[in-house]
Amino acid sequence: MRRIVLTLAAAAVLAGCGGSPAAAPPTGPSSGVSAGSTSPATSTPTSPTPGPATTPPTSPTATPTTTDGTQPPPWLGTRPLPVTADGFGEVQPTPPELRDRRFTLPDRLPELPGSGFASRITTPAPASVIARSTWAPGCPVPARRLSWVRLTFRGFDGARHTGELLVNRSAATGLVLVFHALYDARFPIEEMRIPTKPEQTAPPTGDGNDTAAFNCRVARGTTTFSEHAYGLAVDVNPFQNPYLKGDLVLPELAGAYRDRSWRRPGMIVPRGPVVRAFAAIGWGWGGNWHSLKDLQHFSANGR
Image (cartoon, rainbow, N blue to C red; front, side):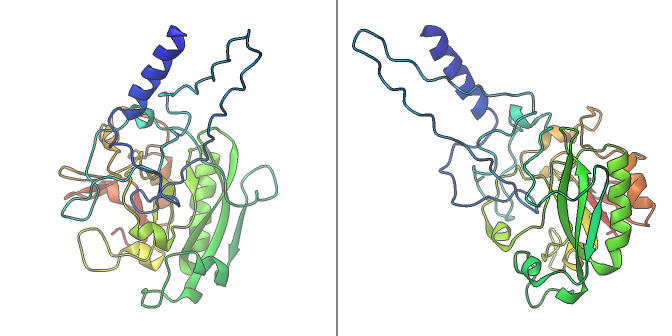
């Protein structure tokens, strides 16, 4: 019994290291930087059923907290950060569970047929897809000019997964070539889905890692539309490749990835496969910017 108590206490300490105080889970997934994160389903331990009076009750088995980065922590996407005057979340130390982040979240789409790379482009994007995206009247690109791209990618588990992008139809074919190259290079991606309107106004949790394209929003720190609002930009593994400007880190818990000399899976590096694949279709990388570094960001015009 003493050993179980000590194990539970140690797990609780590890789960709370570097994060914000525990908050009540929201009713839906909370956002991270630009696309949010999905909180994996958790189960409530069942209380043991007492045996006969002569048999001591069986103690429930504690679920160990892992810090090796291979499993999503149960609090992922559920702990809102304090919001600062600039509207971002408070930058906090990276929790141990996310310092070497290499898990893949469950797919949300049916698997595309086949055993290798596969893709499907639907133009214009179906109304049902537009309805669950961030598109609204007033966005700088008409909905009819957006394509729904489904494609396969490698997860951090090495397996074949199916994701989706909403992109400008002029970029759809080129982006399929990009992600085909990343699939062949076995570059890992955590999740790939379309950002939603509720995520744009959800309290920041600082732990999102969605690879995404279209997002109808203004560029950070400006009043003009981002290239994402045109469907002409893609963010790849934002947590492993954060936005860095002075002390600002986005996602706000991704500070451990400031150290680009510590190479971990999912990181984008100069002259690496991700930079080369986007350069092949003429897209520029935010990691080459001088006043700030947007390491996750690729766009058709380099901005």
